[in-house]
Image (cartoon, rainbow, N blue to C red; front, side, top):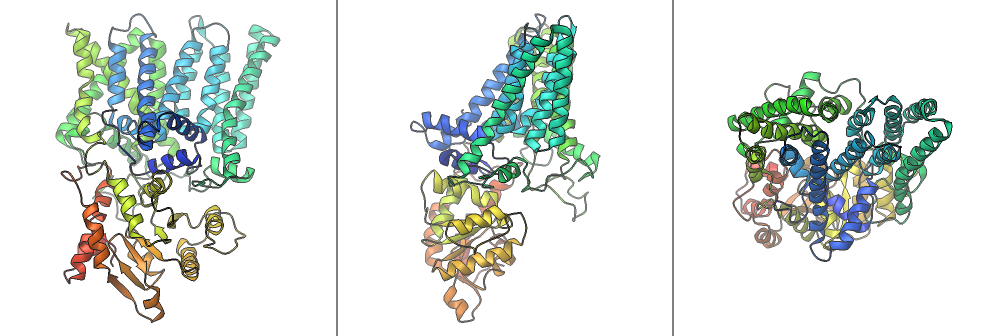
Amino acid sequence: MATLAPGVTFWDAGEFIAASHALGIPHPPGTPLFVLLLHSWASLVGHVVPYAVATNLVSALSTAGAAGLAAWIIANGSAAVPAGAAMAAALTAGAMSTVWLNATETEVYAASLLLAMVTLAAAARACREPGVRWLVLTAYLVVLAVPLHLSALVATPAAIVLVAQRDDGVDFARAVVLAGVWAVAIGAGLVRAPVVVAGVILLAAAAALLARREGVRRAAAATAAVVGVCAVALSAVAFMLVRARLDPFINQGNPSTWPALLDAVARRQYDVAPLWPRQAPAWLQLANVGQYADWQVGLGLGATVLPSVGRTLATVAFLALGVFGAARHRQADRRTWRALLTLLVCGTLGVAAYLNLKAGPSLGAGVLPATAVHEARERDYFFSLGFWAWGLWAGYGAVALARRFRFGAATGVALASVPIVLNWSAVTRRHEPEASLPARWATGILHATPPNGVLLAAGDNDTYPLWYAQEVLGIRRDVRLVTLPLMPAGWYRAELRRRGRLLPALAVTSWGGDDLSEAAIVVQRAVAQGRPVAVSVAVAAADREALGRAWIANGLVFVLDTAAERAGASGITVDTTAALALAPPLATVGVGVRPSTDAADGYFDALLGCPRYAVVRARGRPSESLDSLCNFR
C-alpha cells in the first residue's frame, strides 16, 4: 500500500477501472468476475478514497492474501518446517518485482495470483481431509479461472500433485478428477470442444475409479457435485451476455449474442499464437525468461532492460538461495515441495512453451536482425507464478541458511526481506512524474480536442487513460474517441455507427478491413456532421496524412483544417495560443522519469513536451528529432 499507484497507470489499468465503474466489458476475454469484484469493492470504499485507489487496493489486498496463503501452505506442510521459514518465503515471493508491480495497480494478475493460492490451499486440505468436500471446492476454484483469468490455471498441475498425495499413498482417482476439471476449464476458456470432451472423459474415468473404491452411490454424488460447481463457476461468463445488451461505456467485443460471447471468451479478435510453428527459437524464448528473472530481486540496482553488475549478483545470490531452500524444503516436506516444483516448472518453462511468444521488445539488440518481430511490450507478468515459486524457496532458503550458521530465524527473515529494499525505488508507483503522468496525458489530450470533437487515437496507452478520464472522472465526455487499431473489428465498426453514426450501415461483423480506410470514412462523416476531427500526437505522421492534408497543431493533437482543405492547401499550422495554454499544466514535475524496463512512461512524458516544441517550431527553430517524436513529419 505504501507504493500503491495514486491513480490510473498505463497499459490495461485505465480500461479495467473504467469497465469497473461502468460495469462494462474490457478487452477479450472480458474477465467478468474481475470486473464484478472491482465494481463491488469500489462500491464499498470508492466514496472514501478516489475510485482508482479503491480498485488499485484490490491488487494490493489480493497479493497480501496470496502471500498469507502461501505461508500457510508451507507452514502446515510438515512440523519439520523451520520456524519463520514460511513467513520469509512469503516476504521474498511478494517482493519479486513483477509480483510487486502487479500488486500496486488495477490489473488482473494479482487477483489471478490470489485465486491460484486459494486453489492450492484448498488442494492442500483435500489431500488430508476425509470425504470430497475439499476436492469439490478445489474443482470449483479451478474452473473459476475462466471468468477471472486463465493465468490462474497455471497452478492447477500443482494442485493435482497436492490432491494426489495422501498419507496412505497416491490417490489416482482424485488426481484424475482434478485433471478432468482442468481440461474442462482449459477447453471452456479457449472454446475448444475437443478439450472439453477430453475433460469429460477423464471425469467419467475418475467416477469409475471412485465407484470401485467407494461404491456407485458415493461416486455418483461426488461426480455430480463436481459437475455442478463447475457449471456454477462457468455461469459468471453469462454476465457479459446480459450486460453487453445494455451497451455500457466499455463494451469491447459487444458479446450480446452467444456467437459473439464465444468469440470474446476465445479471444478470436487477437492473433493467438499456436504451439507450432514457434514464433521464435527456443533459446530466444528461454532467454526472455532469463532476462525477466534478472529483474526480480534487485531491480533498483539497475532499473533498465540492460543488466547491471549489482543486479545480476543479487539475482545469482537469490537463485542460489532458491536452490538451497528447495533442497531444505524437500527434506522437510516432500508433498509441498513437489507442488512448488510443479508450480515453478509450469510457471516458467510451461508458460514459455504454451504462449509461444515472440522476442521481447528489448531482447536481442545488436544480435537479432532489424527485421525480427518483437512483442509489443515486455511480458514478464506472464511468468509471475514461476517467479513467485522461486521467491518462496529463496525466502525459505534464507531462514535455512541462517539456521545452518546458528543465527536466529529473525536473521533469515531479514535476509529474505532484502529484495524489498533492493526493489523499492524501482517499483514504487508514487514517484513523480510517473505517478500523475497517465492522468495528465489523458486530461491534457482531451482538453486539447475541440468541443464535440472526434479524436483518433493510436492504441492502448493512447486510449485507456482517456476512457478512465471520461468514464470515472467525467472529463470531456463530449469527445468521441476512435481507436485506430480497433477499426478492423466488426463489433467496433458497429459501435461507431451506433454511437454517433460515424460509419454507414455495416453487414460485416468479423475482423477484417484496413484501419485507415475505415478511419477515413469516420473523418468524412464527422466533417459532414460539423464535428471537429483531431488526431493524437501519438499517431504516426504517415497515418495522419492519409486522413487529411491540412492540420492545425497545438502539440497534443492535430486538428483537421477543413477550410484549408477545401481551398486545396496542405501542411501544418501551429496554434501557438493553444500550445502556450497547454504547456504549463503539462510540465513535468519532480526530478524526471526514472529509468525503467517499461518505455511507456518515458515516451508519454516526452510527448507532453510537444506543446512547448510546437511553439519553438512555429518560431522557426525546428528539431529533426522532436519533429519525429511529435509526429510533425
